[in-house]
Image (tube, helix red, strand yellow):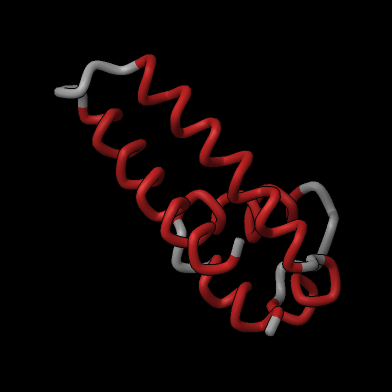
Length: 88
């Protein structure tokens, strides 16, 4: 099941950024799918999705709805909500 959760997480821009890029740069895993599967649990991925959703909501409060950044954060929010609804 974790493989499916991680596969779906890699379809969410904010989770790709955190799980594949930031956490790899921090040395938590080697950047491969196998490395990520060894490091993450479903609970860790869900918690990170919720954290990133909080950040997206804060950003939506900051930007004007006509700003390009607002649209990006709205897309992130929708992706994260869909992921959390499915796996959370």
